Image (cartoon, rainbow, N blue to C red; front, side, top):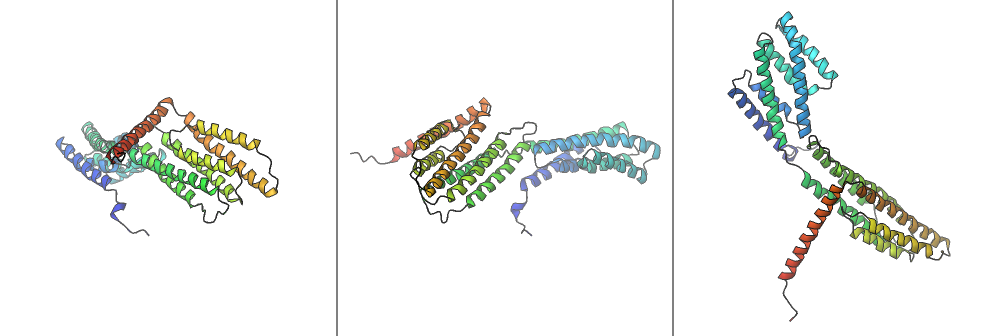
Length: 358
């Protein structure tokens, strides 16, 4: 059992609910509504973790209210407002709500059914009163969640962390390719990429939920693309461990891995790297055949690694080509801003250094 800490509490949500409930009750009282406290309860039940959940919860609550009112009208009229009549209303309301998967609409509408019962039945005045309670309570709940802070900045940070981890894997592969002894070369880095990509998926899912009606799936597609690339890297890792010597052909392949790592970023369409890979293929074909079985096996492993790298780059190339033109421009614009910032920073640092030319 995990130890409780203040970090486990969603303080922002608790504060929003408390403030919203008070505001809803005060507003309902200002309008002179009966059962004004119910507006606060409606706000409490309306505020969800995301904008979309909040809006959909409100829609279900209004639909449930309409059904509840239609049930109360004949039942209270013909059966009176005794507790057993309320029991019939509640039973039918539960069956309907469960059938249409509107469970969250049941509690507050059950409370509103008691309002009708205490008022002696369904009247036009009471219907208007309950509608206003719903509008005030749900409206404040939706407004509170509408101003929920976006987590886009956090997504970009986590995205860069994942890319940096993959870049590190490529750099280590570049160095290990030139070593016959692979002692201490573990695969824990892949568990780390899996953890980072999983956390990023959760953050992206929360971001999408807060888009209300727009489904910007770029980030979800991006993280899936990186996960697919990581699966290819795991294959390369297993092949690399099979090398028991360092063939001459390993040097250009190591340099190519270093180039991939150097140019590994969101906006790279991989076209130049794929051309470079084709040149490596051509060079491999022109090499003399190995004269020993061991050399042949190691050469075959290198060729297999090169084939996997082609898949690695084509995954990113395909992802880039399927992007809408507007998204490509946004990515390139962001990269240009980073480049300009770095240039200004380097220039500022250079200006601060003492001039030793004289």
